[in-house]
Amino acid sequence: MSKYQTVDYDVVVVGAGGAGLRAAIEASAEGAKTALVCKSLLGKAHTVMAEGGVAAALANVESRDSWQTHFRDTMKGGKFLNQWRMAQIHAQEAPERVRELERWGAVFDRTGDGRILQRNFGGHTYPRLAHVGDRTGLEIIRTLQDKGVHDGIDVFMECTIRRILLDDGRVAGCFGYHRESGRFVVFQTKAVVLATGGIGRCWQISSNSWEYTADGHAMALWAGADLIDMEFVQFHPTGMVWPPSVQGTLITEGVRGEGGVLLNGNRERFMFRYIPEMFQGEFAETEDEATRWITAVVAGQRPDARRPPELLTRDVVARAIRREVREGRGSPHGGVFLDIASRRTPDVIKKKLPSMYHQFKELADVDITREPMEVGPTCHYMMGGVRVHSETQESTVPGLFAAGEVAGGMHGSNRLGGNSLSDLLVFGKRAGEHAAHFARSHSAATIDERQVNAAAAEALAAFDSAQGENPYAVHEELRALMQTYVGIVRTEEDLQHALEQLQSLRQRAARAKVGGNIQYNPGWHLALDLKNMIDISEAVTRAALVRQESRGAHTREDYPDTSAEWGKYNLIVRQSGATLTVDKSSLPEMPDELKQLLKSE
Image (cartoon, rainbow, N blue to C red; front, side, top):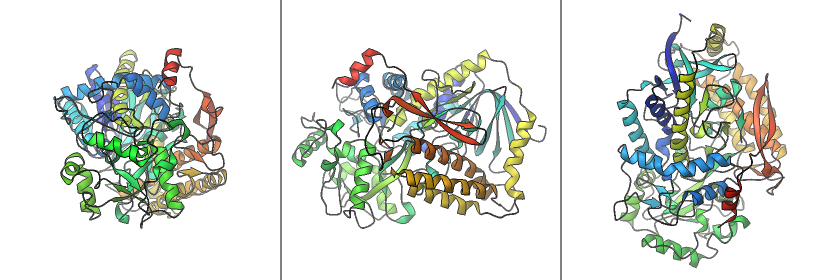
């Protein structure tokens, strides 16, 4: 142990996005000595990329909104596979978390009488997303960072955590390394909060940045925690498709929330053909009706028409775009068109969607105030993750907590836009609070030096490999494999093929060879990340193979219907020795009063 830097904290929060910052702030406020560890620089969090807004039933724009309606929308969007208690807590507590941000200095867009403005978004009955133009995530991170830094939380930047250290099945600490120097570091701690985000770098076309390599999902799995809903990976319907250098870059759902429409290559509005039976009656079925809705929204009036089908849930829109393209009705570069120019004036577009205006102008030489954008589905968000207690966010491993995208259960089979930001605020707070309570009520565990030495040896193995596999080549093959065989639409044959190829990639990754030394060495970092990504890709694939139905973000071409029987179960992935197992777990029973909410419209 003397060879490594060793530090001692009550609570260690891994990840400095919205969930990690909110957890660290709360743990510190509860009196816990708190460390915040981030893989990149503080401020370079994925939360920054969340553009459209934070979903909370403030009822500032539509007085009929309530937590009950938000709860119902969330459950319906998740196709009723959500952990109902998480969805209830989220809907009830999101408004206060947003108002809290405002008290801490967040500057939201305003209504005419000075309240926080809210916009429409897919799957939400009423305008519910509090926003700052299309830069909401950036404002949230700025606000939380200012709060956290002024609270005196210790921050370890450019530090990657690789392993959770255990003592008799309970958290004793975690092991990682400083990315710049390569020096190993051991955190002795009573509680760890995972807030590491998602797994999108396992796919070829993704809105996720380089940090999203399944770190938290994998560390939890290796530590013995349960993973839940791993088959549900969300493909956001609107990512950039051209030029190739920016393929997959996110286009906020706020474009459609502000009245943007989807057109195929024939310039037809095609979404009217794809309204699922469970949503019929809620969405406009003719262009005239949809136009009346948009006209009312633009005029700042309450719409008397039904919502346009462009605001259906993300899974539905992504599949519709995929079908239009596959049937030969796509745009020149393999997507469809998203048109806001014909719906809003240039001044309004630049005011409401400033990031989108600059993004297309600078990256694609497209002026979205004059011409449509080309868009297509991009791997965006992971609904599945660490199985946590709804109230405390503690995993099945004592002392290990999770919040944000790395935690599963809240969103069911499909997340509604805007719910991610309120999710990380609500459950980031709860994870930090209960991690601090755990630390206060437990004595320090003992770190096993053998675990530390084994983690260090594993980390250095790529320097000693004689085989010479290139980690970048293995990663590109993994991404292509997952994109082709475990993408938006799946079949048993494709999933079986993916499992076979993942075993081959695992063997190749174990032989990854890197040169140079441990000082800032991106090839070495990727060689380590390959294990995370391959193990979690297998978890996704195995769960997708077991669920023999289509539900939310999981579409099986060989099982196209949604099954009432499968709707009774979540799937749980566990590591047993060197293998992964997938088991059914019955959904918890919902109280009668909430069942009645789901039946009411």
